[in-house]
Image (tube, rainbow, N blue to C red; front, side):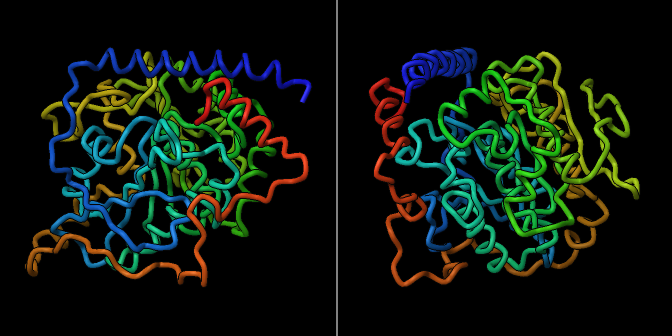
Length: 395
């Protein structure tokens, strides 16, 4: 309690820094046009109890293999699912290579900036809150579309990147791989003050300590998901050192050496790779020189150019979406040829709401109350929350 007087001014400074970053990005992207309407995405309901109170949107290509892969895509703060799909180009990739997309979308009632709550314990633990809602969406899609359970992936930007780290840590038995863009290590923060500190200052921990946080997040003991890490060297919103801490976390989980197995230049940008004992690439890192906070794009008419530039969607000559899909093994032309030239049945209908992927409980509490702990006699968290609201840092 004695530090409360120091915490509030510091948070106010962080808030000003955050709002300046939002304003700078929006100003630099004034020429950006909103995604065309209607969106390519379809909203689905009835996928589960949804304790995190998230929306579920999906994209299902007309042509799919008998047992397609599934990619979960998590937008960043201030973004929407449709806007991030338009900018990142994932649905164009899904059309080309034949996989299904899920776009969880945050609601302003949960977070006024539409950030996934990667820093709240009630949302980042297995079978709780937002993480559990996303897991329910995955199960719903798997059952509706006969998805190959060995090919389920997740990626996200910024807060979506941090939530990607959460999904990989809490459900390593579900995801084969993930891609964290301008994100943070799992459990870097478990409160608003810690979140700002991780973003703007960074937090250094020993590799084993980072790894233990992942190992304690689920009963799973391997094999572990492959991880792709992307970060701009000039990112002032999420300090670039976070990429190094993510690498430390996952090299420890995979029991790999800290030094990369190989280093190369791809589309003009540095790529480092860590391989396992069999020579398989399990971790990769891209450092995008001079890039600020956002998802790297290659916009244009090139064969591997996807998406459209906009706020936090930056044309730097490399398509992270395509390279990530390639790292996951989704871009094999020979595999696509095997099903895309076969006779097609009637056009695939738009996805429809289906039964809950998880049997409902007898009583479903209001979505965001379900996982909140009971307050103690002296609820320090409530005191801090009240102070944050007084300072204008929370609603």
